Amino acid sequence: MRYPSFDHFFITLGNKQRVKMLQLLNNEGPKSVSSIAKALNAEQSAVSHSLQQLLQCHFVAVKQDGKERIYSINEDTVAPLFRQIRKHVEKYCIEGCEHSWGSKKEVSYGHKRQTA
Image 1 (cartoon, rainbow, N blue to C red):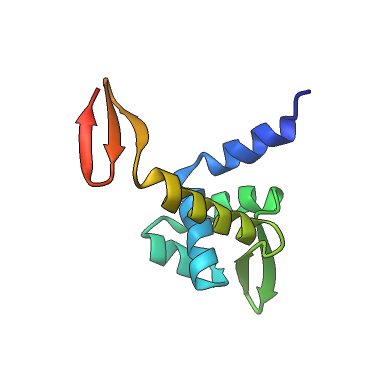
Image 2 (tube, helix red, strand yellow):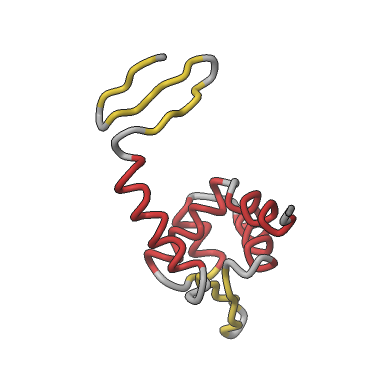
């Protein structure tokens, strides 16, 4: 069985800028577009565009506060997911992940890197 929504979910998380935004909101709480842009040293228009994509997939919620839109992480599903991701990373990815860097394949074991 194929789940197109799964594809869209992982495509959304495949963008480093969007993941950084989610991490920021998860770690520091609700923020405006301008404060997210400042914290990530990013263009406000790029942040707004990424937040719209995150909003469409319900990764974030938004509330109007005067003239500002305040974004927060989806506490029901995304915040627990980030806790699970952190648990996985701390257990498995610090001690041995494979990464392709250009034409070389490196395996990371703790602080040591070996080229395969």
